[in-house]
Length: 273
Image (spheres, rainbow, N blue to C red):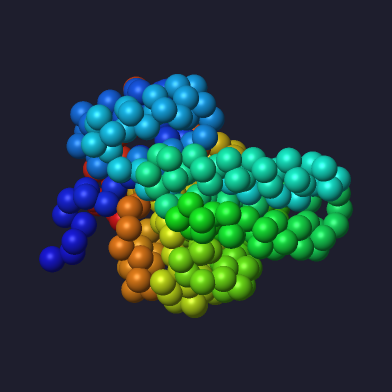
């Protein structure tokens, strides 16, 4: 029998219920019996770190990851330092909230030199690793779909993410596999296998056809074309048995009552993941 007859690994990535504040998201997970939550820093800021931590503890909710660190490239040395300092704060927040995974969305180029931006990403991760390690936090490099290279992330393939991560120990730097961003890659399964014991997170949603919007067009699992179960099994074969986050940017879903979203999320997770 497939282990996916229950939701013990299911995590609500907060962005899926963007209109909920952290208290509403925590209460919603409790009502739905969802044991994990992936947190976003702007949501934590609304209530504050101590209040958010207390809320999570009282609900018995486990934190799968904190999003996001990264956004490293910048036009000036001063701005790069500011961004690195913000990443150090993100590391501290992750540790305080009880997760050992900080998701890195590495950032776009500040000009036309994408090669230089990738070098900035590499150097910044190198500077951040010792600090993160001192807090027991792992850095999860999340490659984004190439359509995001100009605005969000110059690391666009699993191969690039693996090459960066392999400069460090598996308990320092790994990769986050988000199906929306990597499903199209002909080398995906080879690169998932290459990431053995370095996968720090697994995010699911779906790719809708036709795609309604580059940012806000993710679908609920089963509404698109991604081979979700095949990718999940490959990730598990590479050693990942941690929480599985549902991360969906979609205005229609955001405008749906959160409790309905969570019930549909559970149903589709069991059916398609």
